[in-house]
Amino acid sequence: MESTTTPSWEDDEWELCNDDGFVYKRRRTRNELGPSSDAGPAQPGSGPDPEAQEMGRRERKRKTLLKLKAQYQREIDQWEYLSNTLRAMEETTLQLQQRRRQTVPPDSSPLLEVPRTESVCGSLVDDLLLQVEAQEAIIRDASNLCDVAEAMSNAHEEEANQSLIDLPIWALPASPRELLASLCDQ
Picture 1 (cartoon, rainbow, N blue to C red):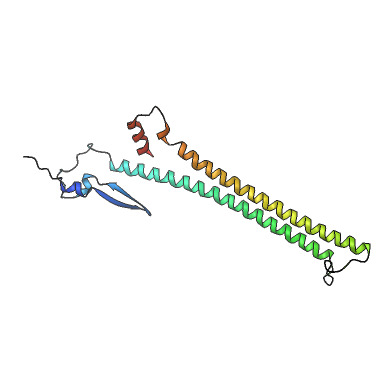
Picture 2: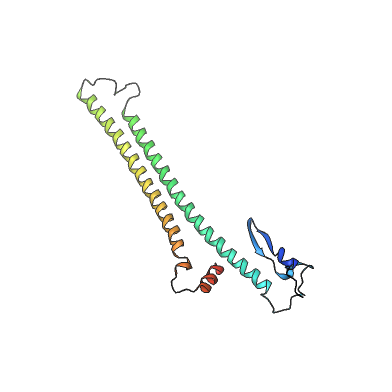
């Protein structure tokens, strides 16, 4: 007479694994189930080699970490470029402000005074022209930074879209078994 109850090892066949902070659930092998298992000791060659599985897991982990490292390095390089551009922009603005201070005497306020001679008018026009040029340089640099940020955003969006497009589920001639096999490989 057959029993309709499931063996005790099937009730507890899943385990939580913590692999350097990456937590996942995996099915226990019969060897890990312990003495309550109904099956006898595993025979050599009857299942996958645990050492080969461990080596495969380590290789997949190494490849994933290298890919993640490359992605982070690209982002760091982009942020360093933006930081250097911003720093150069600040230096240019500071130089233009220093040049403006050198041309205007500190005790006079050219915007509040009414110019009386042509030389004062020329000085005032030159000062205003320097201000406009400084503002134009700031706006141009900010526009360039916005263009770079937009390009980074577009590249990130394109990369995310491409990763979805590259999924094996979109391959038309694949059978469900081939699809499951390819998804299990990743």
